[in-house]
Image (cartoon, rainbow, N blue to C red; front, side):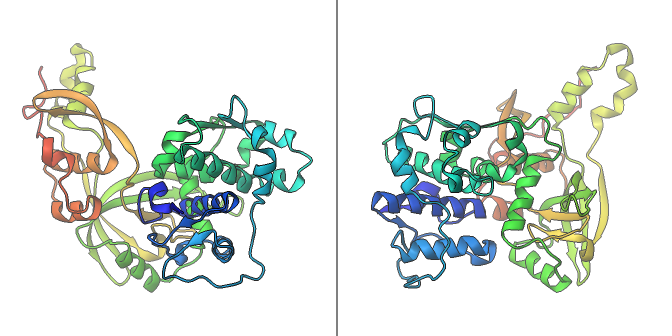
Length: 399
C-alpha cells in the first residue's frame, strides 16, 4: 500500500488538479497490483468536478483506493474509466524518449496514432496526466532515476491548453511535480495570463463558475476566512464576453478589509510594491544632474485609499461568474525576489509573496493586524520580517 499523503506532502488537496493526479496515481497502483492509501486525506466533494468524483468511486470499487472508515460504494454503475492502464503495460518501453526522460506530445500522438482512444484530441489531457503519474510514481518508488520528465508541447497543441493545464497547476503546488516535472511549452504567443487561466480552470472544473447570491457570497467570505482586518488581494478584470468568459486581468491591489456589511465590503488599499532598499536603488539610478527633481522619492510612503465593493460585482476566491472584481487570499506558492537589509547587509533574496507583503506593510509602518495575518498565512508563526526585518533606509538615500 502506498501513502497518498507521502506523495502529495500533506493531507489536503489544494486544487482539483491535485485530486485528479491522486486518482491517476491510484490507477497506476491498480495496474501494479497495489493500493493507494487515501485514508488520511481530506476530500471536499464541493470543490471537485462530478466526473472526477465518479472516477474516484470507480477506482474505490476496484480496490485501487483505501479509504479507512470511509467505505466506498460496492459497485459503481457507469463508472468513468479515464485511461486504460493496460496501454502502459503493453508499451512501457516506448512511452518516453531520450532514455525515458522526455514526453513529446506531438511525437507521442504520431507514434500511437492507431490507438485512437488514447491519442484522440479530447483524451490527450487525460492520457498525459496518467503518463506523468506513471513516471512520478516510478521516481517516488525509486524505480526511475531522479531526473525531471520533460513534457514538450508545441505547434497547434499549445492552444489546446487542456492537454497540459493540470500539469501547470501541479508544478505550482506539488513539490514532487516541481522537482521532477519540466514543462516545455512556448507560451510567448499565448494572449492570456497562464496563471489566471489555471485559476479560472480550477473554478470551472469545480463547478464554481456561475451566478452566486449575495447571501452565498457572505457565506464564502466566512468559510474562507475573510474577516475584518484581513489582508488579501483584490483583482480587477475586463473584457468578459461570450468568446472570452474570463476576460483579462487589469490590476491587483493589496487590501485590508475594514468592514463587511450585508451588501459589500469597506476596505483600504495599500500600494505596496517596492522595499525602501529598492526605492533607494531606483533613486540612485537617476542621473545626478536631475536627481534633485525626485527628492520626494526619498521619503515617499505607499499610497492608501479607502474603497467600497458591492458584493454583486465581487467574486470570492474561485466562486465567481462575470464580476468585474474578485478577492483571494495571498497565494501560498508564489515566490518573489526582494532587495532587503538583513543583519546590516543589503541583498536580494527570494521569499514567498506572503512574506513579501508582510515585510512591506511592516517596513512602511502601515496599520494592519499582524496577529491575524500570521494566523491566516503562517499558522500563527513568525514571518520572515519578524525574524530578520529592519525599517531600513531611515534617512532616505544619500544625495
